[in-house]
Image (tube, rainbow, N blue to C red; front, side, top):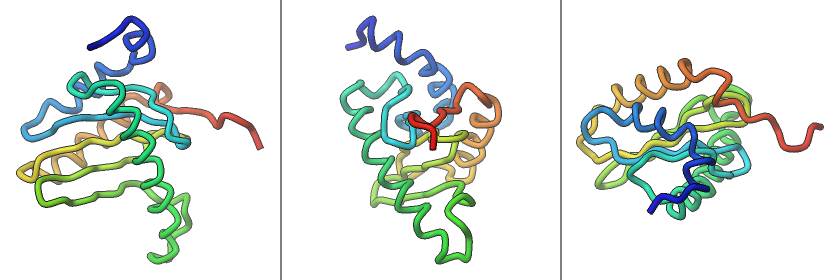
Length: 136
């Protein structure tokens, strides 16, 4: 159930819903680097979206830390794809300190989702940028 508080804090949710307008996509969350939920798609409730944001934050941190394995600095990380028996989780950088995660079924067009996520990130530009909470 959506609340007024959720509607206020989920002002970018409609943009995530647009990113899901392709077959076999399920849910989307927008999160900050420290795992705080910034927005979520309509199909996922706030509690599940918050839990997912926290988990995905850890995933992006691990992915960035393994960049040296590809001879790349952590700042070069762009996207992580996790495959399960029944689907995928796509995680993409969406600006400074912001990330978008999308879940799908296993029958999704992987390249299409990746492309759609890049379009979303480009289109949203500054709206998806989450500055660090405490400047260094």
